[in-house]
Amino acid sequence: MEGPTGVYEYARQAGSPRVYWQTHETNAVAMQLYDKVVERSGFFVYRKTT
Image 1 (cartoon, rainbow, N blue to C red):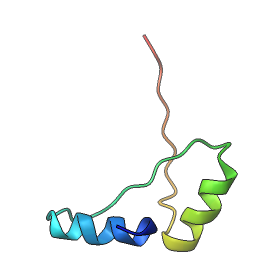
Image 2: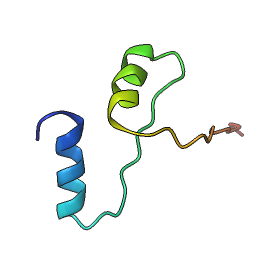
Image 3: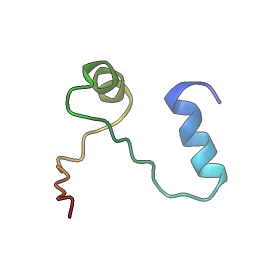
Image 4: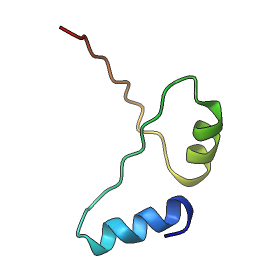
């Protein structure tokens, strides 16, 4: 499996209809990579630890 595109092939072979990428908002390096290979969904995730 080579880079992010290898993940797509792995997911396809496993029968997964989609791949999700998640990173912290401060991880600019990862975000630059993801912006090159995927489309942002426009959603933010909020959570509260109990």
